[in-house]
Length: 402
Image (cartoon, rainbow, N blue to C red; front, side, top):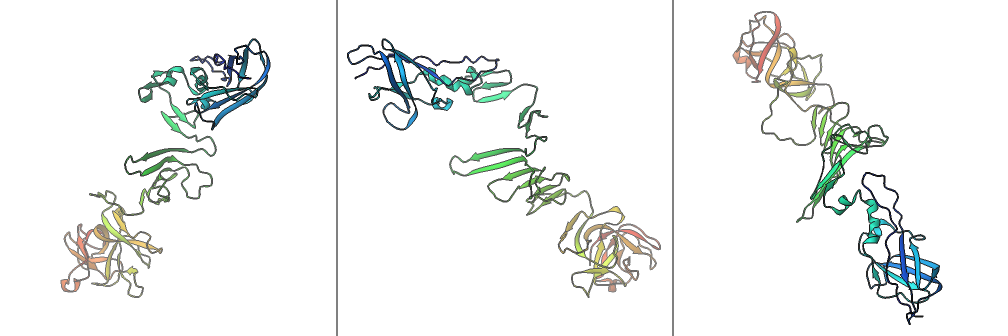
């Protein structure tokens, strides 16, 4: 029997979404009504099988987006009514773009042409919109957020939480009261001409099973470098690591650092760590140990040309910069190479005045005034900057080995 297609497609049985009210669940159903007639135009009667199929376009047979069969549909004077979506539910994403509906009656082929869905079916998409104003993209405000062109902003006095139910700041990412939570944000970009891209993660990573010791610490991580965080503020110590996740000082850099001017305010000399033995203390004069290469020992004897310098740190004046820290893995002492350091001196062979050259003495670990300048060549420690009239004591010395 040749069938004529029905006259109309009725509206969605729907829900009105009202701003400010709790939104009920949207019924993913369509009410479909039409009139069937035979080839002579006579309205049909009785029960019939109707098959409804949704396509992506008006002509092709595949792909099929959705299909549903209705059996024993009552037709009276040609008029029928069915609810689509009962056995095969619709989804809101199904109507995110244009769709066409085909109808088949009993054993007949699909009636032509297919019917193009109009606005009613696409109202299912409203299930994911906050309001009609925001869904239309024309701007407006829901009391918290305002859309203005391509911008969206909030002027409320409260805080925003992502993964946090009680945010403590204007924006809080993560929750310190929920297990396995992390407070990370991701920043990504891609070149418009070169095609290169980069992804950076910033924040406080999740801590369970953390073998890298990053837990609870603030990190900045170039995720595509594959080397772990490039920057870290270590939890518990406040130490900052660049190129390391185990910073051992307030600033720990693994790699080369470059500055135009480095101003050091916490020390007065440039020192280098050397392994030493013999009960050596800050301010003592030390010499190269001829029996143990690379090591130092307490200087003993006047005008000792093996003199290496003075151990930094006496009288509360420490080194401003230290070279080779931890290089040998042995007990080390910072040897002042240049700058100012307090030195243990012996004035029993003559009072020491500012400007006097100092050398080793017969008092172990002590400096003395240079009296024999010929013998002093190669054994000079530096110049005195303060006075010592008699006995032994500390003298501030401008270190300058000669």
